[in-house]
Amino acid sequence: MHFNIQSILDSHGFGNKNDYQNIYINLYNSLKEAIIDKTLQEGLKLPPTRVLANDIKISRSTVIKAYELLVLDNYVKCINGSGYYVSSSKNTKIHFNLKSVNSFKHYPTISKKGNAFQKNIHLINNTQSSSEIAFKPGLPPLDIFPTNIWRNLSNSYWGGIKSSELSYSKSIGLQCLRENISNYLKIYRNITCNASEIIITTGSLHSLYLIGNALIDKGDKVLTENMTYPHAYRLFKNLQAKVSQIDLNNTELAFGNFKNNLAKFIYTIPSNQNFLGNKLSMPKRLELLQWASINGALIIEDDYEQEFSNWNKPLAAIYSLDRQDRVIYLGTFNKLLHPSIRLGYMIVPNYLQNTILNIIEQSSRFVSPELQKVMSMFIEKDYLNKHIRNIVAIAQERKELFMEHFISNFGDEIVLDSSSTGLNILGKFKNSNVSDQDVSAYLKQKGIITNPLSKYYISKPLENGLVMGYSCVNNKLIKQSISKMKNEYSNFLKLN
Image (cartoon, rainbow, N blue to C red; front, top):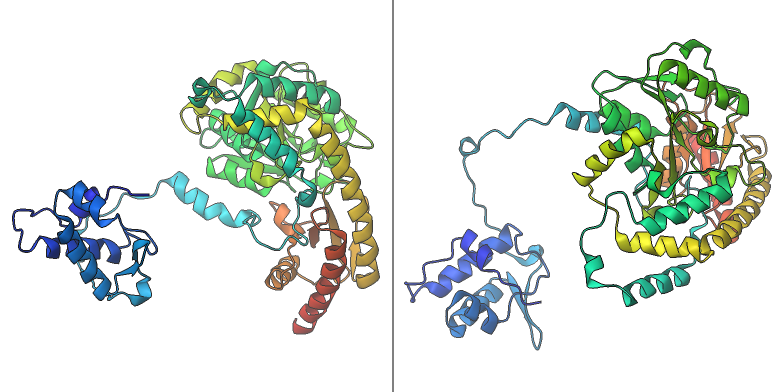
């Protein structure tokens, strides 16, 4: 790629073209400074001498002189037949252009909201990418995602694309995808909604960000379960809400003390309350709706992993029981297909829709139309239905294998909770003095990824254990990783 670097040269002192005797020195110095301050980065190919000469209106021989000086000083390397490239910083002569500290003005202060995002980062589990997947919680069976089908659908999209479709897209999302999601929810969750009520997002956290900005003013009260999605709690705190927690009582909301709480909304994950697939009972769901009605509040229903937890014994979504437009329903394909897809949706009451769409219009604008169209075809051609059946079966098979080998290796040192129906399984320590955060951190250093159960609690943890994801790990790796985990856990106990 022969890009024009004239603006870079001008900003690094080049420009005295009248002094032809020294112009190659001028060019040399400008390029050198741009390399030193990494404006021109290591490995970058410089423009060919003829192209640069034409761009900055000097002779080619002058450019060649400047390039050769840079080669002599190891700022640039010449590869025969290829061109001139910026050298590794290890080979360059480092020059420092020190400026007085007093010459700099003070920078603007970080906002209170910006500081809140930094302050609350410890409240979430680290979800950064890593090569280790055993036993990272919350991941579906990534190895069976139908990449060939997705590639073919993507090729089909680009093969029939019109130039007009490359322009800006609607913030609400493509009509075809919203209609297919509406049909999908009718089949899998018995939810009846119009496509016009659905807004496409990049996932649950994006949906919560939009809802939070639409509803939360500084000091507003919101409710969450005590064991909750850490990112959601952090977000509400960052938006300067006063967050109160409801403790879980036998996996159900201990709601009595909050019946007269003037909160704007409660955030709940009824299909996967403690991230293990345990579900909020029908009486509690109805009680929640009654509370929202009496208190003029909303319910944010995050139907996280519902495809797994509701497969055998489905419970009606709170949204489907609502008759007063009190529920905002969140769904995502990130846990169903793979996290990198970044595609979700929410069903929003009419009175909130314009506000949320205006926030999208002035921030993220819209989700990629290509992604939306391919997802729409994936649903419409029945690939999603087939994939769900496949991953549910594979996840169950891997769960059974995981439990068998885990029990065989750990015995009663770490006791598994077999009632889980989601993508994760909980192991509780026999020794109550063991810190789940210390164990998790130690195992991570050894290449085994787990989440400490205590990190899901907002106030004082009620239990201590490890949350482990099994469905993303193939059968061979499950056996190997459990053996490794057992050895490393034994080493941890010896060291502590």
